[in-house]
Image 1: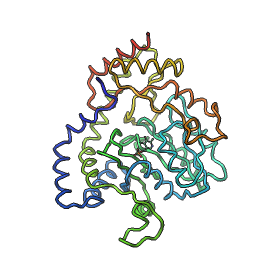
Image 2: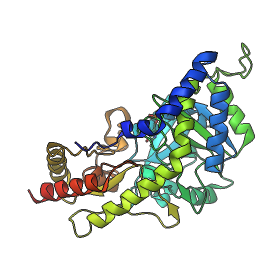
Image 3: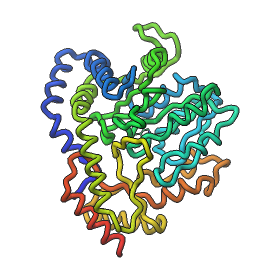
Length: 369
Ligand SMILES: *Cc1c(COP(=O)(O)O)cnc(C)c1O
């Protein structure tokens, strides 16, 4: 069996530090916030080259708090890519704002920046480029185009810890949200997330909103939520952060190996946007021929013990919770076509050459049958 993601292999590398850290926290019983959380926030900010990091309870909350800190409120419109994890769109709906969709660039699966800008209207309060699969969408171009319009750029960096665009990380030049869901490049042992921002006041706003609307006990200046980072999760994240640079390097090497092994194979290999340092959260190929062929290939891979996946099988407008009569099937043809053809191959820092070769052999057999 070759898993899609091997969390056991990652744990083996940090087990001792995690153990020692858990003992430290248990000795103090300070389970929410505290010195481990502050230390992680500082270390992750330094790692990312970002001024401020605020730990929160999960990535979906991070997107919501970032949107609220950027001024999004009920009745506003927020533009998001048609193909993303549902956690990008839920927060928009939770705020009472309206989800507006934009189609994708079929080569990178990132949002098409021109289409995202074309979807901006008089009620738009924010756009959310999603840094899908481990590479950054062109947020700088969005910021430049939207400067002085009052439309915020809120980056969803859940899949891009350590990724750079022209040497800068998400959150270095504008507000970004990230997730430390266990399977992410930097994963906790449960739910966790963070907001990154260059702006001190915005960081305070996020921390206030996430702490029941107040930074002093029993003083609540606004109606907030309970979304904070747990000390035990911070212990795990600190131990893993110390290895993230190496792990991302190992992911890059594994992606390069897939690229070589797949030369001449009847799949479309993933493309990297010029100027990007990719961190390969996922290695996504395209199986030409549509959903029935792709699904057959996926089933064959599973039969062969290869844990391939689909990220994601339905674009948002074809997801029941986000169905909108303004967006019938066919509204976002590039996202729809991609959803029917994409396939994620097993990828994690500790994957071996042998496992990758086995995966590609099984893929070739599946493609031929
Ligand atoms: C994982 C993810 C989220 C949500 O994060 P959770 O921690 O699971 O709430 C949001 N957006 C994207 C693109 C993600 O991959």
